[in-house]
Length: 464
Image (cartoon, rainbow, N blue to C red; front, side, top):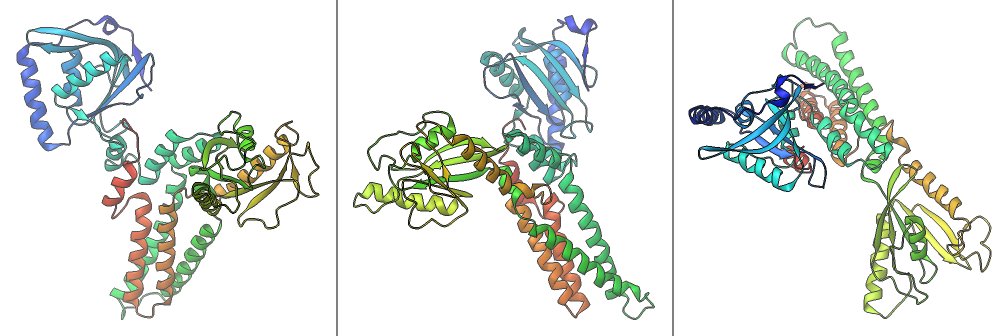
């Protein structure tokens, strides 16, 4: 919690101290930066037009930079209205009057000394403050660098860092809940439980290797065998529950396909609620895929309007048909639209069969009938598609891994535990368990993650 300091600091117009004080501060900052990572800064509130812009700073020397700007540090976690000043020769220049918050490490987001400057959000103000911060020795942050420093200082693990990125990108309530659970450590706790169990089993195995001729209790070997079997089965069951959480995080793809002039583009416009695709009575109007992002069943869905499927000598239209077939293979659900008689063959994939233009002729039995022109049946179709979206992401509670790398690490762990159970030599079994520990450690960033960190944190926005 932070508090607004309403004492005399609220009207503090003090200019930072003398040139000697400024020079001493800069010398101390240079010495400090030789031993610690440099102070970084970024606009955490984005570049859109707003009343307030939040400039975030972190790193050893943050306190001295804040003192250079506004004379003295506010009380920790207490908002204080201060003048921010820059020295141009002998004359101090007022940059802005801002709320300043000071978060001394390690009780900060990054675990380092940190600060926030709540500025007026004009571009000139932001640029002037940023230029002054560079002059004082700070540098602009790289994508995800604040969260990476938080990871480095043990303020969060890799799973929680990914959850923060997902929380920022969340479009729906379901995505928000899923990301927040990951930030709160729901996945980390489960994987840590597995790591603890695996560590105990590895300790038992090492004891059997180091003391083969000693009087070890006979239950040590049996506990090892039983423990490996139970952990292996638990993790296999976890993997078998599906990838609903991963689908929810990235969103689904529904491809709208069918022959030319059956109303695919009209259906896309109706589902999107706007004229996104060109509609014409001329067959073959759609030559390339058109993608629109919507929400169905609290799940983000990308609707893809594809070119009409038919034999054609037109080179461009033929390429559109080829791309349509590609989208069918990639889609989570295929919405196969026809008018009049049902298609002679249905495309592969998990699909929904829809008969359009029921204002001209009724839909066959067992098929969803709609008329995009009159709106008949559209509510039913929306409900069906929303149910399909929920069904495709329904296992998110029981299978909380949200990325392909999570699944790959768990699969690798399961593989090594399975191999350990088949090894006759104790040393070989111990090596398989060590490999399983390393694979499991990559989930939370416990081991062997330097290359992985660049990938994970490189996806973050600047300022986070």
